Image 1 (cartoon, rainbow, N blue to C red):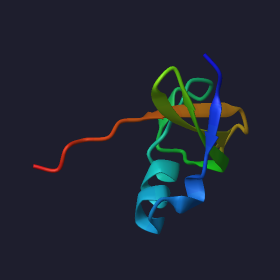
Image 2 (image 1 turned 45 degrees about the horizontal axis):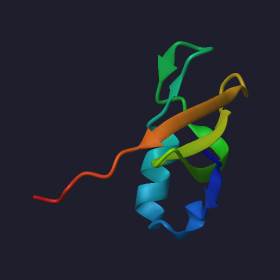
Image 3 (image 1 turned 180 degrees about the vertical axis):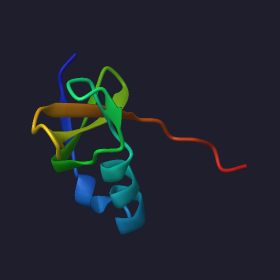
Length: 70
């Protein structure tokens, strides 16, 4: 299935900041190093935010999971 770009900047600022801080880098094997140059996309019915690790500059990718409020 094709990748569909989404507008990461359309998310509320607090949500964007949380997503940029709460990351996992496989290369560093560390959590919460943060990412920059983030972009959001949808693929196979799932939403992802991808960017560069702030420590090693390698690509990091997080799946966005929407939770029901309640």
